Amino acid sequence: MRSRTFFCDEADHHPRMTQEGLTAPGDLTLRFWGVRGSICASGPNFVEFGGHTPCVEIRCGERLFVIDAGTGLNALGAHHGADLPQRIDLLFSHLHLDHVTGLAFLKPAVLDKNREIHTYCGNLDGQSAEEPLNRLFSPPLFPITLDALPARFVHHGFRAGETLTFPDGMEVDTLPLQHPQGATGYRFRHAGRTACYISDIEHSEPWPERNLLHFVEGADLILYDGMFTEGEYPSCRGWGHSTWEKGVELCRAAKVGRLGIIHLYPQHGDAMLRDMEQAMQAAMPTAFICRERQKIVLPAEVRVPELA
Ligand SMILES: [Zn+2]
Ligand SMILES: [Zn+2]
Image (cartoon, rainbow, N blue to C red; front, side, top):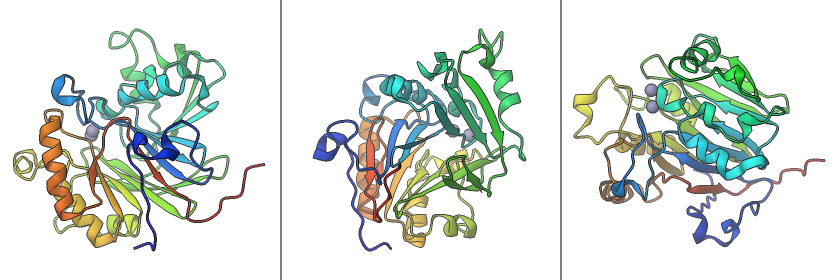
């Protein structure tokens, strides 16, 4: 395990995070805009953990990556407004509806003709998301096509397992995950810190699977699919999801510093998730269940040169 780990969660509990823009240039920062799996949740039992489907903001210093375009993408867009970069790199775990339906609602960015939205999809044998997204976002399922929006969409395909290299030299590692039609796991490394996004995934037998173990080994944080309880799992086998217990096993085996459970079941309410979190923390004190809008900062371990 790395020698020093320091984390801060809810923005209000740490002075460095009380305002936007106070993070140091080198930090690796994650923010959750949607943590629900399958479909949105809403109502008095879903206030603390939130109801939007998956969308995670990752910042390597100031450099933005967005994972998944669930309904949480709309909240991300509304929060940042015009402050998003001209080029937005959006990495899909895969294209099931809970991970794509927010795409046309990344407002105001999609309404800006100077904006480019680059999507990356790794589970279609090298094909990009263009054709499936055009099928979804077209009449009669959706009133317009994506190319009718002022922003320009550019769709990139790759094979999960490849390392993505972006025009600015940033690199992101990827891994194929066990899920119906496949999914892609991501690993972000920045300033000596490592964070991984491992959802949607069904655990294997035996567990953890060797390639995954190697991929997340020594990471400071992994976000992991904790859709089901161990009691629910047997009747949902083959649906492509996992449990927090399997997340803890993975972290122990791979010496991962911290575990964030994501892709929450839409009928797991706040009280149940709090109990679940307590049980999980008895097994792994640094584990937590992701809450919508929560921010996690992994402070730089090595100095990052200022950009010119
Ligand atoms: Zn999903
Ligand atoms: Zn899925």
